[in-house]
Image (spheres, protein in one colour):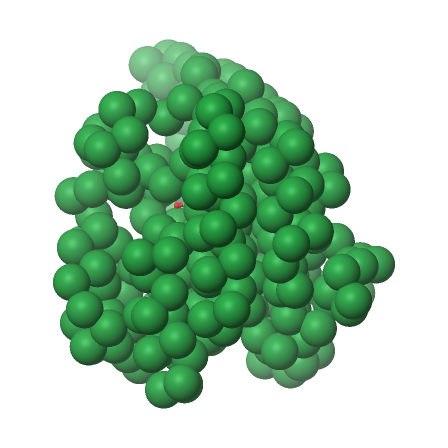
Length: 289
Ligand code: KIV
C-alpha cells in the first residue's frame, strides 16, 4: 500500500495523498454484518489531529473524533465541557488528514439532547463544517426518536450505550455497567431501540461481557466494543491510551506502545544538548556559502 501522505518539500508539510483508494462509506460499514455475522471485524480508533489521522488512516475502517479529546487534548476533567466548536475544529483536521476511513464525529454534551430539531441543527453543522460522514451520540431509548429524525434527513448516526461518559454526573463515575439485571436489560433495550431507529453501528462501552455478546446478537447493525467483548463486530480504543501516553488507563486498554516514555527520553536528551550547547550542531545551522 502506498503512503498515506505526500511531503511537500518546499514547506516540509505533508498532505493526504488524493486518490490512492476510495474512502469507505457508511453503508459499506453497515454491510459488514450480514445475518448477524461480521466476517471482517471493524477497526476504529480515535483521532483528533490531521497528522494523527494520516498515521492511522490506512489501518482503520473508522476514525472517531471522540469527545474524549476534552480529557486527552484539553486536560478537562470530563467530556461534559466540550463544545461543538472544538469538535468541528478537530473533526475538520481529521478529515483533512485522511482519505480512506469513514470519519465520525462525536456530538458533544448539550448539543443534541433537547430535541430532534436541536440535534439536526448541531449535527448538520458538524457534517457541513468538517466534511465527516457520520456523527455519534450517546444514549439509548431516549435518543431513538432523534436518531430516526437525523437518519431520515441524511445524517448517518452511530449510537453509544453502556457506559456513556457524558452521563458521568448521573452515573456517579466510570464503572462498568450491566452488573444488575435491571441495568443489563436496559442496555439491551437501549441498543435495540437505536438499531431499530436506523443507527448504522453502535458503540458498547464498559459493560460486563455477556451483555456485550447479548447486544451484538440482538441488533442487526454492527457493534463496536470498548471494554466490552472480542465478540463485538468491531473494536475501538482511544489512540493515546493504546499508545501508552498516560500512566493510568482503564483495565480494558491494551497498551501497544510506551510513547510517554519515548517522548520523555527525547525531551531529556534535547534539554541536555541545549544546556551543553551540543544542539544545534553544524548540520542544523546555516553557514555562509
Ligand atoms: O469519546 C470517545 O473517544 C469515545 C470512544 C471511547 C468510543 O466515545
